[in-house]
Length: 126
Image (cartoon, rainbow, N blue to C red):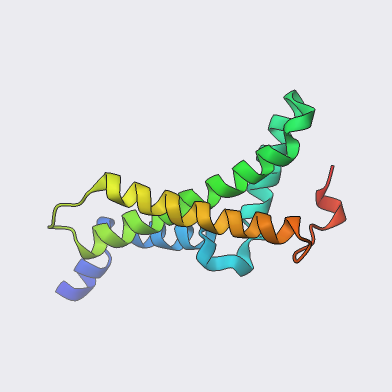
């Protein structure tokens, strides 16, 4: 029973949820972009585009980038808290790694869309 108590304690459940939701938002689940990241990015772009119509596309890219950053940071936080609970951590280093990897991924995706390797479905365009 001690194993089950340790497995289902609040900290483990919280970190497992952070890792799971973070994975769905992160660039590691590229197949899931259609269900999570793109709708978040589209809603963000639409909200900003409502106030500033010319900003729809840049705001959509920013929303996509933000959702990827959020996913990476959630995964890092959950995994490191689960694995390295007793060791000191550098939050700045974790933040820079998350920002860097998500930014690189977003640049690659934007480049693939720009050069028409990936096509944006017509129903997503304003």
